[in-house]
Image (tube, rainbow, N blue to C red; front, top):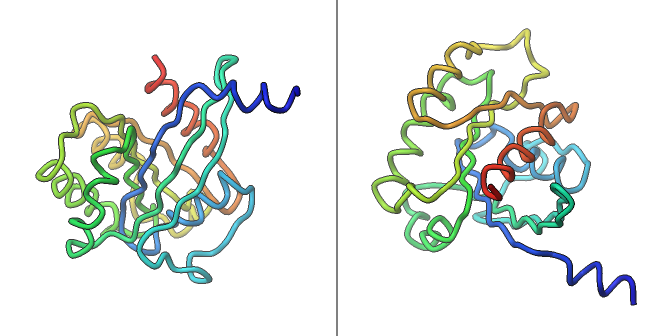
Length: 178
């Protein structure tokens, strides 16, 4: 009986969509965050859409997260448009080791803002691969500037060593809940 009460205590269901270039680690971030496992993006490519789920306790309440890992391209936007429209949160992912993936945040943001209303979406930038500091080509100040320009918070994270993920997702949920 106790287990059924626990399941009934889930108060909300949040849809979170990951957007960004290929090979920035979207799948690795979700696999680490949801399953506490690291998988190199080279091992598993997202076909078009993968869904991860995770329950999260925040301030004494339990929430269910549904995390959408998209392989985004302009040709896949229309079939996936409803996913983006229904999303509560959108996370733009780049790699600190890939200047183009960072520059393309503007591209992803523009494509979405041209096609859906972003005013009611919580958004965040995750700068992944923080464990590869020696290979860094995108500075923290650049990411901070982009964050301020788009008025979106950012976090540097590493799916390899699980740095910053809990902090980033908890911060995102706190903005949705309050």
